[in-house]
Length: 293
Length: 236
Image (cartoon, rainbow over all chains, first blue to last red; front, side, top):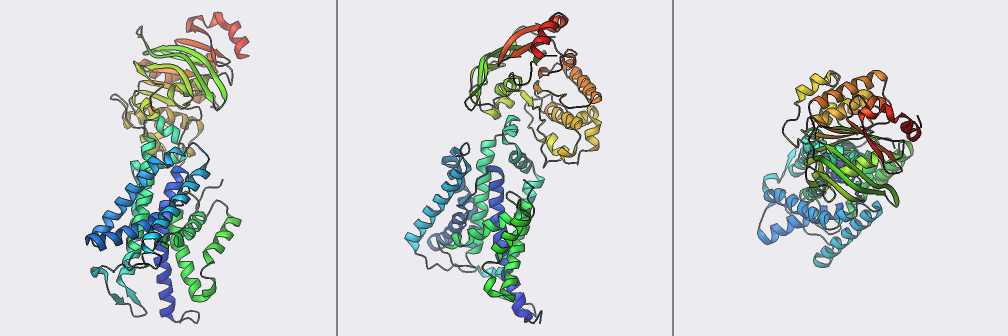
């Protein structure tokens, strides 16, 4: 027993929190990268996550392409979709008020969600756990489904990889510098418009990857993105807008906070993240890891 | 050693910040290997001239030709690739990058740039602080870094905006020595500087600017004869 709670229930909710936190971290990471460089609040991020899950579902149902190839294919397809969106529309909005970018991505999210609702309804479609990750492991104090353990490990690898890309590579140094002063970076001879396109594609690809990874855990549904995106925005705000490390760490922390609240005070579990966001905004408006304005 | 044909030629350059008309037909020429200084009071358009040549101000008209290439229609990132580099007045050191990362950021645009070891020989302070965040450097060190990162790229023409602004006399002296060194290496320099005494150590010619256009042009040898004009226009 921990604080009067059976250890199985406690550990189970912690695991749920950690899994949710893994998705929050991966999604908020993409949002933070996009916002940091493009200054676009990407409301289509949830729809791109949903798109990733649906593409995984469709290539399995129609073409027989399974989970493992889909893990490669889906981020590429959603990333390319993001690149097309950025080139055709978002790139035309950089010189005007950022509100236009927000409105465009919000509209895009509604269109994508609407199309999938129209075709597939809202009841959701199952996506099987890949056979290699089926079953579970008895840890003595709890039963750990292997696929859920994989989600935690894979998201840590993705987040670490993205962090290394941004902090330790030439591409990352262009990205960080362009976040500060894009005109000067371009004046050095770096093709910043291309960098913006690739960054949006990378962010969208990360959302797509999170989508296919989520497919066996949640139902593949047109609403799965809009259910997630509000929480993910709260994660980004708490972490600090544009902070990559803040988005990752806050994603896991808030996932765990949500899980623990389900143990101790379940009624508050759906609002705890927003309560934390309000408190953080009052005490530190730039977010836990953001730079003070 | 200078050749006759201008490397950089500017004709009737106009530039706008939004609706504000900042340059009113600037004309100037710089030959290869020359150091030319733009003089003028604050707000007459010296920095704007550099930014408009470089393409950082896109609302511009006129002709800007560099090594036979028309810069007006060129995308900003292609301008640097043509071999022309810009060091801004505010130095443009990136806070989230280390000294090393700041140094390595601009892509190499031509052969003949300095190696990192050569740069660290020229700027030993930077070597000692290569893992520090760029903005943790002193103003003088930041200025050195801003110039150093351009020297690595192989660009042979530098637009240098007020490199001595706000620096201690000993650092100003060091930057003066550096500019002399660059001049001896055959670099072409367009310098914006309010301190004409400082500029006279390196400049071959001066352009005096007022109200967004060039008022007069004279070689360094005429500086002493132009003192009355300089005092009147610069207010010094």
